[in-house]
Length: 87
Image (cartoon, rainbow, N blue to C red; front, side, top):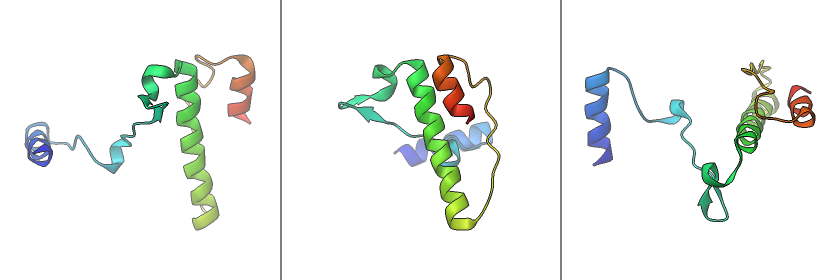
């Protein structure tokens, strides 16, 4: 059923709305969706941690080096956490 709706949306919009390129991930904390229990700063740190983990995997496994560009990394983070991200 979802595949049929997705195909229909692709035809209508001319672009895909689901798939690995969308990075749709739902994290849970104590059986609740993390978005409902984590602060915006905690959500941001979680997302950055996942991206940095992917970059490290690429570096370790494929010997690729990447640059991570962050849009306003200090937003919603205290000074200590902002400094940790930049390091």
